[in-house]
Amino acid sequence: MPLIPGKAPTREDWLDALLSANGSPQALLGEDGRVLVANPAFATLIGHAPGRVEGLWLAEAGLPAETAEGIDGLRRRVMATGTPASTTGPLPGFPCMLTLTPVMDADGRTGAVALLADAGAAAGAAALAEARAEAAQARADAERARTAKGKFLSAASHDLRQPFQAMHLFHHLLSGRLTDPASIELANKLEQAILGGEALLRALLEVSALEAGLVTAKPQTFPVDELLAKMLEEFGPEAEAKGLRLNVHPFDAHVTSDPALMERLLRPIMANALRYTLKGGVLLAARRRGEFLRIEVWDTGVGIDPSNHAVIFEDFQQLGNPGRDRKQGLGLGLAIVRRLGQVLGHPVTVRSRLGKGSVFAVEVPLAGNDGDRSGDDSGDSEPEPAAGQSSFAAAPAVTGTVLVIEDDAVQLEGIGLLLRGWGYAVIPARGIDEACAGLEGGAAAPDLVLSDLRLSGPETGIDAIQAVRARCGRRVPGVIVTGDTDPDRLRSVDRSGFPLVHKPCDPTALSRLLSRSLMAGRAGSLPPVRRPDAACQR
Image (cartoon, rainbow, N blue to C red; front, side):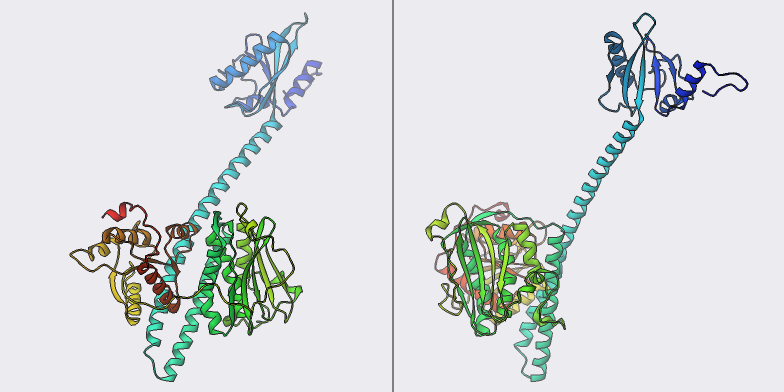
């Protein structure tokens, strides 16, 4: 309230001026709840001009009825008890925290109530609410971005691997028909370009998925020997081609981990062990350490200087390859190992010296008391990679009729040409309906089904194989091929029990897998048929 020029201010004038200068909203409520007096800050807060709220009830002043009633309830309590009261938080239409204080009259009774609004608390509460809302929005935006990125990477992984798979198949077919040395040399260079591009694509997609948090571990209990056998199956031919001994020591124990992610973690370690070992061999073994199992990869390779033990796990780091020769890898393998170890919660360590070989180890929890069966192998003795024989044997080649289910026409043609070149009879199909239709009318049942995992619509290769089994009335062997890296889809294949081949696949490895699957089917050693689902009843 401004002072009147030319008039000596009284004490009441100074009090009015002090009240008006106060930036915190304040008002005095009478015995009937009307506003006796209010400062400009209070009037502005409720949307009135200064001096226009005196004599009004709070509801008349524009506050929501619920808010006005709440404040008046506090006022009545203060009037009755003579003790202050406060709101517990901002009220609708009145965002300030309020404190109501009794004002005594000349007789010592509560004659009015001072309403004090804490603008600072209101601002803080509003800021906190706004910050919380922004954080919630940011989390929602991040989740939408993560979901969108996941869909993009999954689609990119599948769709970009398809042409690489076709290039692998047709290159393999073309190379088998070339006799001219110059043409063969060109075909070899083409193969190097295909392998280099595919390796870079696969590594970049995997790093992107790990960085985006799209890969999560789903631990389960499984025998570690299954994991060791898969590594031997995958890397045995490469070791043999280099004249190296690849030995695997089985270990009778169950571990708790994600088997699919464990495969992805061990694969780069095994690849590096073979790449940097020129003579001697590589050993894959497991050793119990208390409640954990150490899965170790030993090699007699070139070794790593201790000063570089941390560096090798960084992105695009390759020791001894300053020219970035792609034949020596991309420098992303151990970076992927590091990230997968973090996702799984399994420590990954390395022991190595230049010229003395290397030992990479990953520590996995044992399941139950399985480790007690073999004792605690906690000594310091070092297995010799160059000694002993493998505990797993490869299967001889066999042929038969293969039903190939693939919704991509180019892929279907390429796989068909490849299999016919190996002596198989081929039944091509673009989906489940076409595959089942081809088996009607007394047509001979296939000896094996080779199906892509992602078919058109909601169909999967698992559904396709189950449908063919239901139509044929027997356990036809099945093999799944996929370019997908989505962990949930890969786990669904693992649960199905069908062998899995990743695109782009090595034709030689595919040939061995088909032979073993056919032999298992003819020997009656396939897993039991699950109950057919809706897709199998077509």
